[in-house]
Length: 274
Image 1 (tube, rainbow, N blue to C red):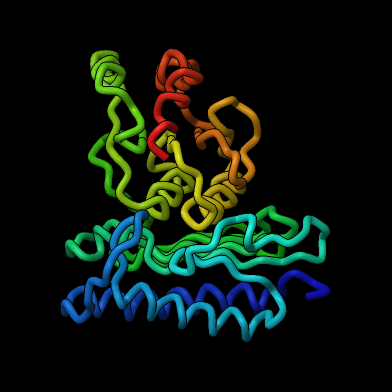
Image 2: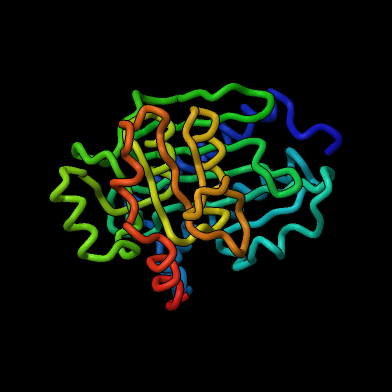
């Protein structure tokens, strides 16, 4: 690709994930999918594999030479990037983000794609078929929402966390201080909600590229600040130390009250199980 993307191709990708998402929603409602043997990362269905094939076919039509990293391929970020020069373009695909919710018949799942250049996202598309709305942006298209008015899964909670990454004592402190939070159900939904201003912050320990790159790009385009647990600007990689996204509209002093009191010991302790 001499040029990363054209405006027409941006719309083509939006239409692609909208079409795939609509078909997935039909399969979910009819129960016409099979749960296959899961990986260490969670369950996989034949719907995940179908959606991935459809998305990859569509992306290859847009850019036959770009690399691809997709969740169900089991590749790591280092496998997808063979260099860091500006000629290296990579699609990052998560066909169903929130497969457990999809299997359970819940709404909290999404379809997401990112386009990266030299390892950095330059475009992203998220579709939440069950709500239904989506959000996307790229270097050739401004941030935009489509479908119905954005809505999320929160009932007044303003923070989304990877629930198992926070010690019970700290969660009790959060509740005592009046900070309302919920556990993550789908990174696609969480990041789209942050981008739309439906929540104030999201926090995770693991930073797998297919889970987070689309949302990180969109959140930053909306003015959110995204860092790792060390407060350094977040960049996907094998050595990432967690990920934290905070809305520019979050109350002053919000982050210090929200994070565990000692992120270093917190993170080191939690990494032991990976």
